[in-house]
Image (cartoon, rainbow, N blue to C red):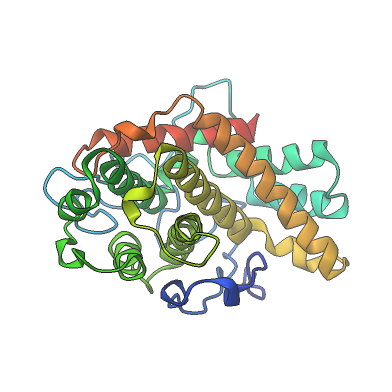
Amino acid sequence: MGTSSSFKGPKNNSSLLPSWADNNPDYELAPTPNFPQDGNNPTSDNPDPTAPIAPGQPVAPPPKGGPKQPPSSNDDKPVDSPGKHSSKPRRWSDAKIAMSRFGSAPGNAKSLKNAGRSYVRARGGPQATTRSAGRGIGAVAGLGGFLGDVVNRGFNEALRNAGIQDCLGKPAEEVFAKLADQLAPAGGPIDEGITRKAILDSLCYLYDKLTDENGTLQPVDALGPNEVKEALLLATQQYIYQKWLNEVGIVLERKDVSEAELVDAETTIKEFVGESVRIAFKNVNVATFSFLDPSVTQQINSIFQETYTLIEQ
């Protein structure tokens, strides 16, 4: 047993981010997990990788009644129905082998689907994989609640509901920076870094949407339901994609492929995840979201689970 060199994560050009979003410390999305010889789940910051965050510990302390983490379970076994999945989770080595085969033929749709299926089953199925995404779900729910309040109740009320009323009258740059710190603080375990990157990518998308052709930043109130939904799609996609690559993507860098081929493989995975997320969001009305509505977390939890179900099919 042992560790290998850290997977650096997907390539990006951080110099294109606005200054307020460039405060995410450089972190390696791994160290690559230890893969025990018996093939069980890898170790991580959480002693049980399939377990959610402990009850009562949301990503950031929202106001009373605000979005919270999904309900936890002490059962670390897969909860998918017998027959659909083996009672024994697929070995992580299977997920690594499947990803390696995809890296050899990144244009092969069949190998991509097999890599996704092997990854989700290695984690115990869609429900168990969703439980392992508690931080991401809580942060996306918080972002969705805040943006829903912006659309329905106005920017000032959204700030109050999110507990960041000290940003009243402040420019969007400062508000977005404060919101990112509220939903996904910098530092901490690996999964917190993945969560923060997903939230920052989503906020950068909104920042770009609010900037007109003359470079003038429009009020946050200018955001509509379409922009909100796209932002939540992006945050969900980025979290699921980054987490998948962090856990088994090291095998792509071990392949004898060029930098361009590696980027192409990562892009294909990202698009595959994005298509699955978009299907899961199809009938979701984000305009009804509110930061003070705890059911938002359950809706985002369901979206994550449906996405993992699609990836596993």
